[in-house]
Length: 335
Image 1 (cartoon, rainbow, N blue to C red):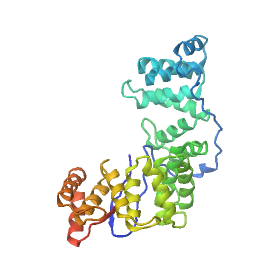
Image 2 (cartoon, one colour):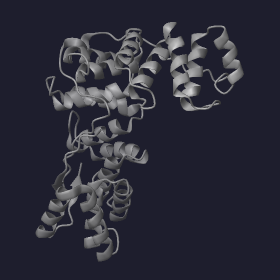
Image 3 (tube, one colour):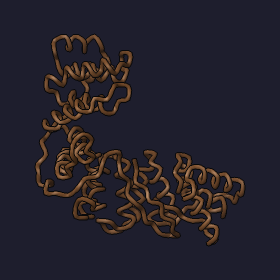
Image 4 (cartoon, rainbow, N blue to C red):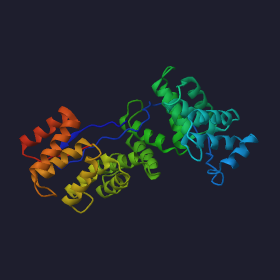
């Protein structure tokens, strides 16, 4: 889920931040809490594709092998995919106290539509893993406390779990904290902290965080405005296929901010985002073909992207285009 605020301007970059698939939480003093160090147990490379070897360890009651066998059944690696068997083996691992098994069981019950949702069980196992310092489980606990589900919402506890997860290096939690401090809905708005956490996630390769960091550099949010840095972070995100970053990188090439001006490259990046369904990029392609910017003028192509933008963006897209036509502008649409 992404929060998108479409803004139409000429030669300006005003861009909203992306929100990940998690949740937003509120302010409290929980940031001072220390996170519990945790080293996640990765799949044993020597055993990962050897069913017989794993089965032998499983027969000896090895919880790590049980977890690995559950992973194999969940993903259909070396065995036929079977989510029910995956849950059974994750449970055996979880009951022996392996945090990875507890977290995996919680995810399987909560997110997997092939199994009957067992919400209370899901939360129970996430909590057991989280209290052992498992960063992903800590993030999920923040998610549950923020949204409530079968419990009362508790923003303070939500923030506490997000902080622990982020300090344990979980990029999604770091991204969330960046958004939390940017929006200031439950905390005192703090762009410096927004930048700090967003950068941590971006440096781990999170494409949404890289996009958000590009936004911060583009408009000087929590950091001095620096278009070249904005272009660099947009590029990292765009190369991972994130459409809003592709569109905004096109904008920088269009305007020549932080990069050498190139209408051709602007058109290229608009195209990459547009084919993914990015409405703003589709409108930008309409504008490019409409006025012949970065590509030969082509009324038929302009009409094609006009229709696609309208079909996918509805009345909002039509209003944007109508306004740009009335003003005699191709338009630069940003996210």
